[in-house]
Amino acid sequence: MQEVKLTVSYDDYENGIRMETLIRELAAKPEAGSLESLIIGDWGQAYENSPDEFMGTLIELAPSFPSLKKLFIGDMGFEECEVSWIIQTDLTPLLAAFPELKSFSVKGSSGLSLEPIEHAKLEELIIICGGLPKSVLASIARAKLPELRKLELYLGVDDYGFDGSLQDVLPLLEQGLFPKLVYLGLKDSEIQDEIAKAAAEAPILDQLEILDLSEGTLSDEGAEALLASDKIKKLKHLNLSYHYMTDDMLIRWKRSGIPVDVSEQQQSDEDDWRYPSLTE
Image (cartoon, rainbow, N blue to C red; front, side, top):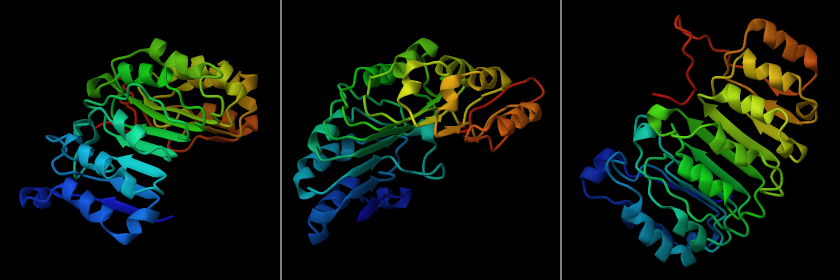
């Protein structure tokens, strides 16, 4: 697969280089026609500037990338911009501009909007953030994505944008919302125990191969519900890595015979505070 990542560093931005220019230069190259994966990294001081600076150009030049299957908006490390500081925007027009897209990833949720989410061929939707607004969760629950096979959402914490509750997550556990979905990731959550208990007997487990509840604050409370579920036993893989379960619970998982990842055991602090993985 041919892949290109475009990045504008802090110094580049100070010197007048813009993501719009890099996109135009890429579109003018002969290999643009065969490009399958485009990663938009730091677009220059992303804590102040949104993708609006280059969205119009990317949409205008979309016909120059007829083979594009994967698009990532915001792939940047903390040294470039903390995830909760990344300013996003309404990215919905990109889905219409790239009808052959199969994978769409987004990092950062401040200002993020996706409404409506409709795409005939998209197979993978990933949103990485410190806190996912309930408005985006509602948009996903209303989405029309008949080919979606993988949905991976970092739910995060209220300090960084998660303003919902378990009630906002429950629609994603309904069977048939995305008929071809086999991988569901509801991860990096401060309510991971509540989600685990709701997921343990959720109808959607009948169609899933992989359930990913990793990177959050899962404790023995949520784990008990998962272990008691016959539906969980039918999964090909259960990802619970980065968790706050006890040693005794880890032994029970080992003896369960369930294909589960329980690596990265964490310890709560002296006041029993537990933190998801992606917090700053």
